[in-house]
Image (tube, rainbow, N blue to C red; front, side):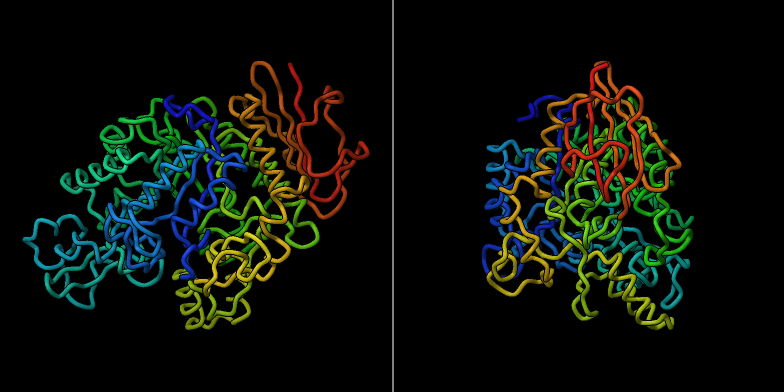
Length: 542
């Protein structure tokens, strides 16, 4: 177990993200719950993870699957009770697994008592907890659009003003210019820290310093001022791991977010690599082939840019992204090999790896009829593009590729009905391939995707070069191979990945012939070639 009394314990840690609604149901409701997570803690301990990041379980009307919080100090009855959360924190600690809560500090639910009071009167003390502008009905203050579609402004007749919302109308943005609001948020975070929480993931944190009059959402002028105050008032009072979701981060900003002095956060989620298969200047639904050479160079920039002066988050999957084995790999004939390759590529890098539930099994995307989708963003896109005249087949192809529901299908535990997720009707369809892809078939199987992830996680904890070494990209222009070297004061690590359905010629670099083979997704083969989706790691002393 990691010693979590040390300030930077998380530099050697591996996190596991749980989307609670889809993880394990214990009541037959069709929705996962906290007791279900407790039931599966031994599974996660066997995998070797140190932290569980929980997508929001706070009280919520569930307009946006919990990212619309109506009470930051209460658990939604959908998932259980505060006592269940306390039990999860306690049982996790027994296994060396901490709980990282997903906090939404950019906006609240419109059902939060703050907003319910704020909309009653301009003189109400909570009115200034939100972002309001004068106007007249039908003429918003400006033309800003919400991320989920439509105007970013909503009219409230009681106060004859518009409030600002970057997401759904039911998610009004909080006004971080108000010091009283900030104090309320800090006190809430300290309350959770006192209950034993070991970390926080901060949703769209780069948008808290918004200036809508200037049409600024991300990276507002006061962003880092607010983050330094937040950290000083809360996170620095304990040994926490903190990660901010920052779609607008570049390397220079990430150095501020993740500065080694801990003045802001431990690290950020940035999405440069994730957006490479999106047509420039268009929406995520507008697809283009993945530019593989640029993908490698992007990873290299971030690895080299933050080495020694910041810290990377390492992830390929999360609740907002498609399953990467379907996205960047081959989820057909080469599913197992490509799932292991993607893990090899990522876990060999410097940073904190995040495993999204089911990733360690090689779970895949799903294809649903439109009536089967539950994701608000996906449904809004379908309606907007239908109205704009897009062909049905094109719209559905975008959903199959990028819908957030791809990641949110229930966890596949075994081959019993509903994959062992629930005895009731699941809130979202189970992927039909659960009879072949499930945890029961993999946990004890030495060649499974699960076992491969377990080996990678163990390697990170036993070989310092994984957490300390620098990064050099090799073969930068090769159209199929992703090859890089990590090196610290004592050892060097070579990571080799063939992103191809075909055998690819390749020769070991000079000096590596006698290196130790740490892991690979095939048995050792003939020198001079890499098999389809082959990946391996070699290590040797300097």
